[in-house]
Length: 458
Image (cartoon, rainbow, N blue to C red; front, side, top):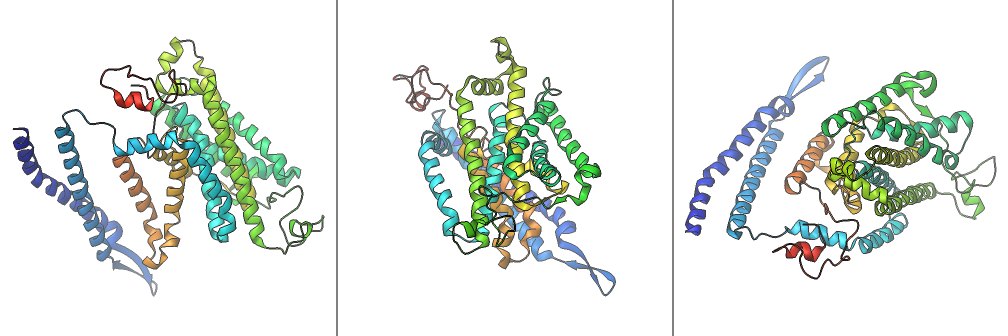
């Protein structure tokens, strides 16, 4: 009888699956004809309209078959769940995330070895690409403290990134301090701004907190844009000195003393500076990771996770939610300040245009897509999103696909959210297990063998 009902349901869903895909294709057709199919160009002083209906056809076909595949996948999944009659265990992605969490130390060690060897085996472009990835990894780990561990949705994280960058730029150009002297000050000033942001939003949660933090990020950007006497406004600040290795600059010749190449008897090469900058951000990122892992095991780290799960329960058992929130904002902002200081000294020039809301959205997407609270998930998501931004250069032979970069970027995030809404490597596991990492010998909950084997809370 169950098989007959399943077959009847499958036949009933057949036309609906096709009609849903057809409706999606129709919507895409209506939306893309005026935006993609028609393009205005200037020719001989006159404005002409060119047609790109072939591109529209490809987009409509992709939407139709993509929606059809999604509908068929969802239909098969519902049928499998119905056939299992409530006995379905964790999915393959859940088991994979749990396996990554259990073997995180080994995976991290292998990744560290590859990261150390990368600059000696690749070109300057890939070294620069790896540096860019590590900046976003560091930013993602910093925001992971606020969003992933403390559960505080922050849409203005780029403000602390900007504070760190402008701290180095102003101190280096006006006071004459070097990068290593400015680095701790950038973290200190950014942490101070984190506390300043934390005080007004202590009583806010969810969407209200997100709106306030978004406004804070825009306030910082507008101040940087209009306070021309200090920040030089939209013109930005240039001439920021590059970091040195114990006073040895990475240049061909220096009037102030020997350079790095001259001191070690090497032939000067621009690659030396690329490699040095890569290892600087690698060390900063590793310090961020180590600090986050250690803090997570301390009482304040467990208080962050408790606050994320239930703030009312935290207050009921005596946790000072005010101090917990302020500590999360301050520490997360401090690491953003460190990353901003490196960003400024790496480019030698900064302007307010580098700290827009899109940067905050990208950092938040890294945390959410990777899996909130997952350190390795942040690394994986950062590699994916930075690679999507570089796709226009890698696949230039296909045409000017850089125009469709936002579409590809957004579509990839939507796809991941549909397939894995909790993030790629999301895996909730208690910081302290009463029965050790292998869990209790017998399940504490009837018919819950999965929880007993993984050590997860039921």
